[in-house]
Length: 311
Ligand SMILES: [Zn+2]
Image (cartoon, rainbow, N blue to C red; front, side, top):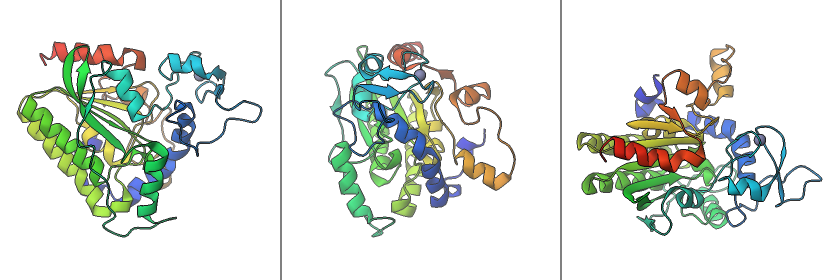
């Protein structure tokens, strides 16, 4: 597919914005299953008559699911296997051996170099998002063990301005890749970014695509193993840069993965899009990803891939 060959400059802030708008409702619905401490206060309430907190309506099959049961299955619907949102912190907990995660570059915070404002000033938006999610920006990075194998690991979180990549996400990921290169560590990046490049930081966001990709090229030349895990949603400048550059690209079932959202594409090229367009299954069929891995198998599959590749 041409997506991973796009030059960074072909991704405009408008594309990224369109991706934000397209992916937003789906991601918002998935956030309903964030565990209580991670739950943003502003998520959509479940349907009337369904007590909030105890029961959830599945976006995949429409069934009413006992929240605890879904959580025990790593936030996957026990009836149809639909994979809900999990926060970056929860993702680290699910993936890494207990107590092994050591965060890197936790002190990096976003700035507002353009004095950007949309519905509200970007500076205010950042503070509100930080308060709501407990994150400083949309990525968590660090090192830890996966079944006793040391790895460098990064996760983006779609609940922080749609998981979009501004200077902090780009810088944290670049440093992560550079440390993985220096330490000869396998690299795992789990993407959950509906927003692509963050329009609020303009060109400074766009340049992160090239910056992270260049660091990945040096990592690859040094013989490193990069496993990219695409989760729902992975869109825009994130999909068009590091997320597509894995030596192995895994995806969770039924994830929305693409560049511009389906609505934007339909409006631009005026043709009916094929069934299942921009889902993990469609992309596997078309050779864009290597394997669909259910969340319960992700840890084992990554450990296996590391061993297989001699990492
Ligand atoms: Zn379901």
